[in-house]
Length: 450
Image (cartoon, rainbow, N blue to C red; front, side, top):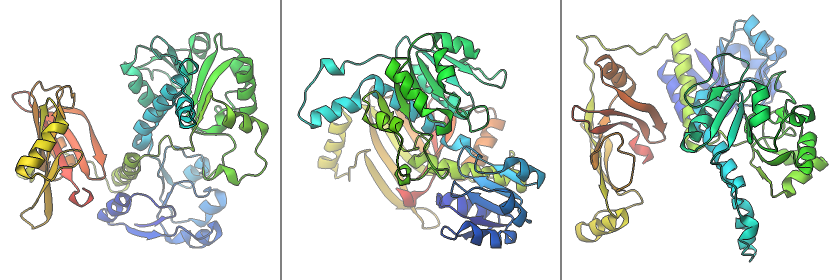
């Protein structure tokens, strides 16, 4: 299968498709017209948001089997026409949902505690304590509109706070242990905070307008990490001036271009935007809620996994008894709790010559194939919960091969996998408990990224 990449992404995407037998071509600079002229040569295309995939493009892509968008939404694609043409659409909301949840929480706490305002004042020689008295999240009612990947992630992050989380969604029975599904009317009656987690569609377009805002019984704070088109900015500013909306956390704006790139390339920005950028009750970020180092990898890997499952029928199954899998290949790390990690690191550096960094010390060695490999030595603070649910003061990390297959085999043997596996630039991680309740960290490493 020949695949064209028209936006840059993490290398794991290309390498993953290559492992499936795909041929990868890149074109990050040609115009849409030039790409249309050659798209008939490809069975797959990988995009972010460089340009729209419309009917004309799809008509020229007569061999196209899939469009993979390395992101959550598909609004840049004519999805109905793609379906008519039999083109499989692949997106990756699972890849950046955690990043969006963390970003939304971070913006909210920053606004409540006036962190940006206080920081700016101190840098300008002002020490104003009463003016920077904050508001606590504790006891508030948080309403979510949209309860898919992003909404669920934000609700999970809120579990550590004493808040009530409500959600409204057009789908039924989406509520869970983190959030109670309810009506839009109840959210309008009770919410102190409203957070948007909807994709772009006709229902969400200009959803937060004066008619919607006026039905809220209490003044509230607004968070938008979804799409800028969901909020009518003129109405938002009007509501803030009237005290109906107390503050806003906006990662997205209705003035953005479709490519989500430089907002300031637009001329004559409207007065409402001028209000936002000068208000201490507004936090802005440039459409980066899902834009983290980790999510870049996760988005790419999610696309690879979905392409593998749909087109190559790769669904990992437990190995047969006659098959063998190389499992643990070495000690990946020794982690232990101490009273003062900083002093412990310094002691080992002074007396035993350890090469110390922020996390501890990395010992390099060669594996059987003479590849560079590493083992991490790290002291943790006594109150660390990283070893939970184990009650021990230490944890071993084991280097493994083919973590995905190993987890499938372990589950088939009745071994519980703790939490969800995670992917970082230096490898994949998962956690299990041994027979004595010791937490074990399993690591499929990428040593070259350490």
